[in-house]
Length: 277
Image (cartoon, rainbow, N blue to C red; front, side):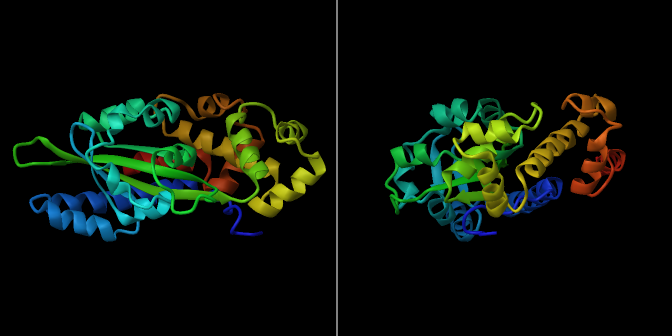
């Protein structure tokens, strides 16, 4: 597999989410302790390897570190300081569907959204690109949290972006991945996917596996298992209901697929998450 073209698809999304939360806890503690010296805090943020943006309570951008510029292929995001307002950005709020999460963060909640497709076409329209041939699709986990002043007011909002997967190269394979993720509720149909990206089905299967490291059907299975995993985190749903909501029977083959991909049975997974809480 060519790792420069499409990252290998991991079945351990749950472990990735746990890692994201652990990192964010450490970030919050470090940044809160330095709130009194904002200049020093910004210096610290600037050397972090993870893309970070800092916003004022009214939504205007206060700071963006170097990793944000590198990640977004932008020469200088700081040209947007004091001008860009995330609470007035229709792409972030509506196109990406993050309005509810963003507004909740600015009201004082900590939120993490997973697997957000970063729209580089929108970034290109707003900022000067370092490389106009930049052609990547990234999926990131984004966490927003607040730093509080001594009076108990929100001093600023910090957004941390952790890249889960990066895709470059064959546009058809990116479209195929996105098609599967959009139509995961439907029965798997290789020919239908190939038709959607205007490619011969047999050629598509071989090319997808070369780029992704798994067959289209295995990728589809992993996507559906991830949806089941998300449902299992809902205490109001029984395990059978979590499976049924994804269109599969708990006593069918997906019970075994879940254990193979996640590393534990559905009941073991739910019990482990319940104990942590």
